[in-house]
Image 1 (spheres, rainbow, N blue to C red):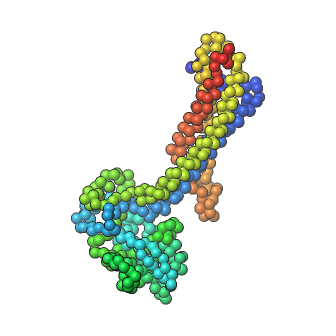
Image 2 (image 1 turned 30 degrees about the horizontal axis):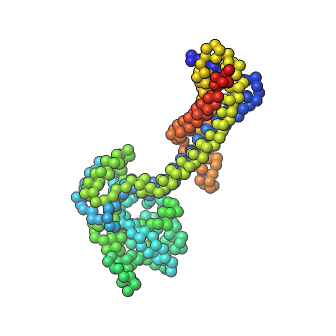
Image 3 (image 1 turned 135 degrees about the vertical axis):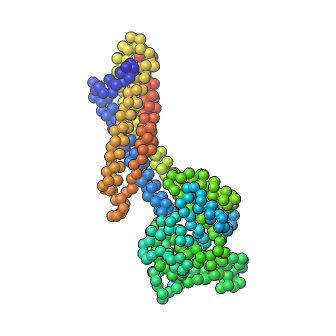
Length: 400
């Protein structure tokens, strides 16, 4: 057995005659355990919040979205339709039109996005499954599905035949709207048949309508769309599919993944995660000052033994290695115990939902092996650094 490791193990598991050193060592061990446990629990909570936040966009946004590189719309040919259907990795796709328009109901007005969708939209997005009330719209009708936030702002219900739900969209090519406002807009009366509820932002953003209705309102041609949303097979190669889709449209379109469609949300969540990690890492660094103090006290307590070993021929670097290994082992064992406690807490919350945000919504936590590795490597790395600082106090001057 390696000599420094043998001595370090003996020092780690044996009690000192000085009771103060034993207390300081226990405090250092407790700080490492609590720090590892707290860091893992916090990272698991933020992983849960990340999954919870992204679940709304995952229910709404497609796997891939095709939009024109320039302008608001493009022409989708029959040949392109066939090529996309034959593209490996594509399950289904939906043609869409999105345009910001003005909605009015009973004297109230709201500017939102009219989203025209075809019948395949239900196979690409889960929006049709998130109805708060009513039903999904039927093709080739004037039926629409509005967001819960829009219905609240307009004080609008379903099948209200006493008040008309109107939409107004600017006519293309009308530069001066002030000359004759009535002739500058296309108008249509819509029939709200459903209210969807996904998230506060999305519920106030979209009104779903039939693709043909949107084309009529915006004066688009039959094969003119503003985007195509695609659903991919699980574990399909996104990069390959994107390359194929771009070649189908002669590289005149932009193809974005779900993450790219929500780049701001992803960036915000990642920034928060990093900030919390750094804050709790700072707490662990402060806690490891106790480890440095405990090792220095141990060095002073074992000074006579170190002199004996030095006089017997042990090199100073090996004596330093004793306390470096002792501190490292203390960090490893403390990190493992803290991780075990943290994992137990996370699994209990997942299973029994003890902490609730609302009476019906449990605080989300997510167990992740990556978080386990991050916490363990953080504790061990910082523990080794702290042990190295403390072990550097073993010098020839001290031993002489």
